Image (tube, rainbow, N blue to C red):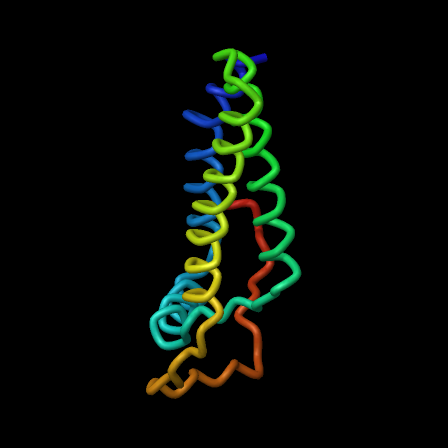
Length: 128
């Protein structure tokens, strides 16, 4: 139901985020902010995932071009030229994006913050 989805996004989600923020101890938030500032975000790299995403997008682009070619009543040669052109542009652009993403990262100059050995977990007593 579209109206309930909007209600959820506009009212319930901000309220739940506010509640989660209120229930999180200040020391935990401070340490998390310090860690976020000092540690770089290191996501795993996967060539297989990049190829899968690229092939999926290329197939979607080719399907759209084929549909448009038939909708515009293009001749077979024109359809082939359009498909090849879209494929070449996509392969060049996607290859450039993947090569930039996969390039070696420079080493971080910031020393990582050591993880704490104890926990700051405080059981919730029902009060805000």
